[in-house]
Image (cartoon, rainbow, N blue to C red; front, side, top):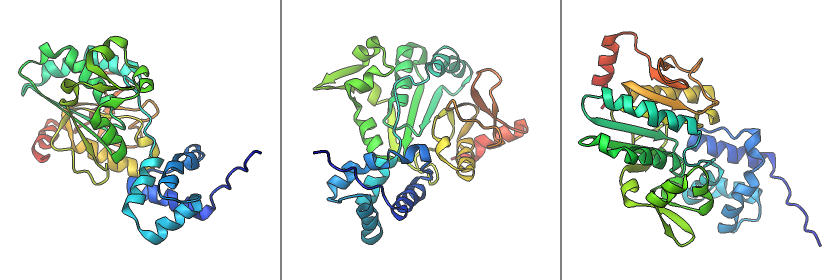
Length: 291
């Protein structure tokens, strides 16, 4: 006997869930993501002993349970990621961007921020590229900050453990064998990689993790989930923490055009963005004013 399909959530339940997601993360649950809501929340409902999404929404309203709210938000966030995602970006980083930063930075400090890092593959990909040329960075201090609002994603990223399916998505076999160790059915990043990255759960609208100025900022496939006001807020944050020579990468479907006056198309690196300053004095002011 075929069981009946579960009834779709009521409009009220949908409003409660989407309202919680937007309030906690700034993300708008678009129609092309809404279809997966029930599937994404099924483990949460099972864990908390709830029969359906309407019951889940009712408990969110009545119980004010922080653990339940966090579980729901983590389930609804899109943690899609892969190693060396958009390979042309990483080719440009390895071949052009990182060498230019190395040649032009006089303080011998390289600071990288992966904003919206999901489960960490982007940050680990950067760490792998740097480890491959570590002899060229001798006597440099390298800092990689990786942030995401999902506590579950950050916990996985910090552990460095990835499934066989995860490592097969973008990670060359040579890099897998050199930088990862088999642990049961998974692969775990070795200590060299994990110690290079500071993973933090952080909200781009009330940030605590980023400090000072960053030379390389990747905020890819994050802004597309926000409305125009939220995107402007994020660009303001990125500009505040961008070194005058910083290189910014967004996702392929994202742009600064019509969104921010603080960035412009990079004069050297196609598809990347540079900090825009009205004057040399403005650039000097940026160095002074960020703590």
